[in-house]
Image (cartoon, rainbow, N blue to C red; front, side, top):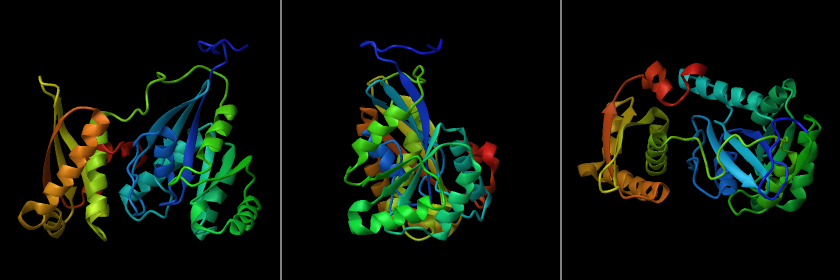
Length: 308
């Protein structure tokens, strides 16, 4: 038996490995991660390219620890931030023990997916195909789509799931648990993510920016936690800055008489109180900063400086 193999309290061998969620924007990677983890670890919105950096979700399944890596969607980059996001996604894919290629079954085999398949074929990591949103299409459409994809890319397993409803997710987790390499756990068993609370706060605010604004505004905004302090009474004070690239975007985010920014703050605060299990005092500030998406400091705040 390998020296680093450990036993659980019941005597079974422990297993642990990294699983990368790979796919085009809006394939449902973050929704699937949240479903598998049973908690909100990655922000979700109907808009594409919501995820900007790597998020880990740690799931215990029997004697296995599955460390999911939720990556930014892979797309054609147009600016420095986009390129850093795509580079981070491919880096996470190459570092994982196993890649889950997540495909929106309603959209099918697009040119975008074909490009991702071509890149995955160049790698040496095992790939499983996961068709998502299967509750939204006719079942007889799934087998032809599966064949079209597997004709292009050898995959070890195929799963059909609905991240939204949870259909098929338990079977996927069971399969992944069996596939993880034998070895010790990388994280404490009660951990859910490696995401620091400061970054979690910024992401929850950014999710509300996505949900409550339209068109290009969410893509031209970034959110940073300036201060995160626990008070003597156990409550938490969080100061967050939203950077936007244009004066018009700042006015829209603030809204008439500050109505929209108050709504963003109120909804984000309620979510944070549930996630942090403590009363929160959330203070938001909006600043105009042209070309923030080209600044190394802003990329560093997103954990993307090494990929830009």
